[in-house]
Length: 165
Picture 1: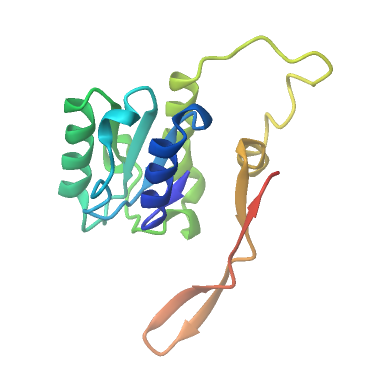
Picture 2: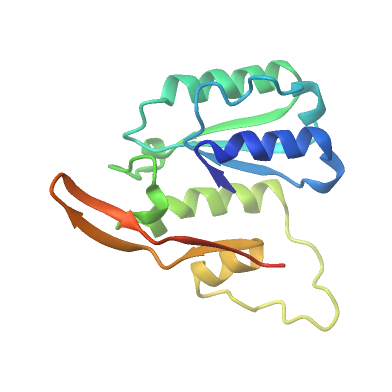
C-alpha cells in the first residue's frame, strides 16, 4: 500500500521483480504514475487505485486504471465516494474517518486474495478485532502522527513508516 509519489516506487519494483509483488494499493497517485513503467510486466499483479472524494487527480486515476486494463493488467479504480466515504483528501489515512476509508480497501483485499487454509501453529483468529493490527500484519504501518496548528491551518507532523520485517 502506497500513497502519492510512492506509487512510482511500487510500480517500478513490481516491473523489476514482479514475482515478489502480490499486489499494489495506490492511494492518490500522481497523474504521471505510469511514466516510464513497462505496463505489460504488471499483467499478473492486482492494482487498486484509490481516489478520495476531494482528490484533484480523480480523472488521472481513471486514466491510469484504463491504461492498465488495456495492457492486460488487473487495474481497479475505487472512488471512495461511491462507497459512501466522503470528504477525504489525499492523506485519508490521517483524517478522522480513516477507518471508514480503509474498509473498502480491506474489502478489495479480501476479494483479490481469498482466504486460504491457516498456517499450522498460527492462530487463524488473530487480529480480527483491530484494523490497525490487521494492517501491521500486512507488512507495515504509520505511527506518531500529530497535528500541529499553523497560521494557515492544521498539518500532520512527525509521522514514521514502520516496516514489519
